[in-house]
Length: 264
Ligand code: HEC
Ligand code: HEC
Image (cartoon, rainbow, N blue to C red; front, side, top):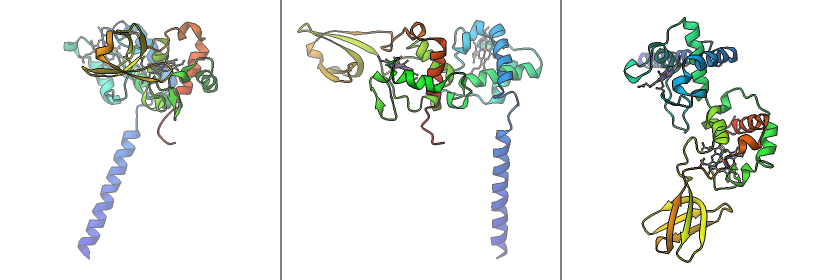
């Protein structure tokens, strides 16, 4: 009987400790997620960091701080702060002097670059983005969301839950900038003179599959192929930045930011 009580007591102590740990994790520096601090951090970043990390942290001499794909590694807030303060002298990242407040503003900006778009404030009009996506901009010809739309490009049902805003924006303004792996554009010339264009899906020594813009899958035997040209650029139109206004692109980013696979 007594052992049972002790066990129950220890059990609830364990739960309490776990609860405190969870509470602790939520205690972030007040600069993190604070729009004013992020804006101040962005200004300092453009002055002192963009020379190496690129505009918007998209990479240059220093690494891309936003990263493109779902599984980008993330440093904790504290580790990011420490990395900025101390630098990585051996790796070419200088230490950053200055008061803690300024360093936390920089940290808040860097953290905001890689936070999922669904959790970041969006300046754009998501309703406008919705209209454009399924209308004038024609995004739905290649992309699907929750089972509707085209299949030639990646599914965007979790675009906002898995990508930072900066990555969504650069995917629209500069297609292929995050890499086109799995979606390479290819053009095949057949020995009989015909040509087929599309996204290269599967390729072996004997055959290849091309998904064309109509969503039709072509299985071609290498024996019938005279030439296979794989393009470096994306199949996604590269002129959205001139075809759409800044407000329209903001709207598309805001609309995509709302797409998450996680139930609310
Ligand atoms: C002279 C070029 C240079 C400047 C200026 C610079 N960095 Fe870096 N930074 C680098 C390099 C190179 C690395 C990679 C170092 C390594 O890990 O070997 C890096 C790494 C980092 C990392 C760690 C990235 C990760 O995910 O591991 C952060 C965060 C960072 N820098 C932020 C900043 C901030 C904020 C500033 C401005 C205050 C800044 N950097 C200025 C070159 C630079
Ligand atoms: C002709 C087909 C096509 C059209 C039209 C198109 N895309 Fe894409 N999109 C692609 C392909 C293919 C990729 C895969 C990566 C690459 O090649 O750039 C892609 C990648 C993306 C990504 C990155 C997805 C990821 O996995 O990171 C986003 C976001 C995106 N497109 C949004 C849009 C939006 C918004 C529009 C409309 C304004 C649009 N696309 C129009 C074909 C298209």
